Image (tube, rainbow, N blue to C red):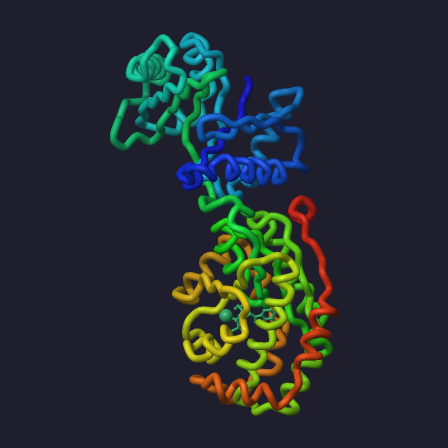
Length: 403
Ligand code: ATP
Ligand code: MG
């Protein structure tokens, strides 16, 4: 038996001239994703990438396929994927081998239909005939089944392609979106909370390669709080690919803020200073945008006037993919991407340590700027940028740790 995975692209197939570079990036991401799993060979044709396990026995191939599927389901740019039986391009071979291959799927179903896609128009049978003939043979071999063309439990698909024919039962949904890297780079402000990892996932889905930065204020924030953020990075790599991560020393800035600036502006000033530093790191990393996990009205620093004050210091677009989402919707995604349990660990964040008792809900930009001007933060910003420590979280390494 020779079984492979058919990977179908979705949206990217629409991207006209960019298509071949999108395909190349997707293929590269897939290769990288499966690199540590075992040997695979790859080819692409007709909006499909063929992922073929290279192992000596059927059992070993089966194992590779079983492990590849869940990984591939997290690769953005894939609309659907299916394990498929590779057959010779003859109806005799297709039908003979489809019968045992489809046993599990058909035994569990009551109704089915056959669909045929004939990319190779020289194949002697037309699609309706393939469907009718294979349908008849499957009915003979699985007499409990009946045909339902509208709502079948199982759709058996036969694809006649250039070199081979492929037979598969259900297609599974892929992660959708665009391949990571096709939309450029962006710098994520990653706190230890629930929201910012979800923001990373959402923007990686739109094709951005993510670099993260986290502001730490030891000794007010602990080593374990930082570790938690690093764990979040690791959890994100199956979706985002390898991620660079900056840990920015923020203690001095926060102490100066606390000592010299009005308390009601602490949070908003902290946001502005974070934004300034993040933009500097973003320029260094060739990023075209900043990403945050802010959601409109969630807390005092996320009102429109507060966002305006933060954006006033940004030197590039600030993307806030959660801006219109409720917490319950955000939590749902964080559970799906498996960051929730890490996010709710109760380690202090620099924001919580320095939270003002009565933050300004509608800060005016002039007042905020005046409050900030009480201290010359420029050298501290320089020092923070210079002192930021970079680490890279490679996808396949974290993957191995997770196994
Ligand atoms: P999260 O949004 O991740 O759940 P949170 O809800 O506590 O954390 P806020 O403290 O309101 O969020 O922060 C809003 C956004 O600011 C975060 O989503 C994140 O993008 C950024 N941010 C906050 N604290 C930090 C930090 N210590 N390092 C980096 N970014 C931060
Ligand atoms: Mg938040």
